Image (cartoon, rainbow, N blue to C red):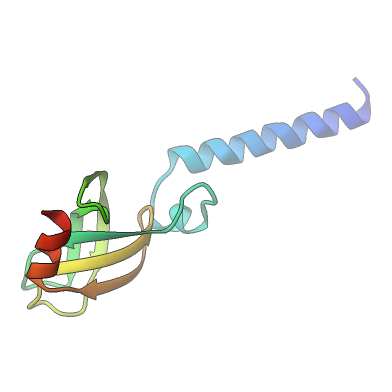
Length: 108
């Protein structure tokens, strides 16, 4: 093997390793920089009386339940219980409270 082939093999192996890492590790830090995950808007019903929500079940814009939960979402109004969440995998970039009627309209 010549030197160029060794370098190209190393680059391909490194790229495959990075891609595998992003596919296997999901948390707010890795999902924020993961180029394979797209940003999306989801909706959720959360407990009142707190601003730190864990294991949040989310629904997409078509009202279908997603196959994963958000591990941690921070809020700012403990009296309200319905959220619009802009996120990229586990990375939450924006939270907005919505009315129960709007939540029910979206999720059915």
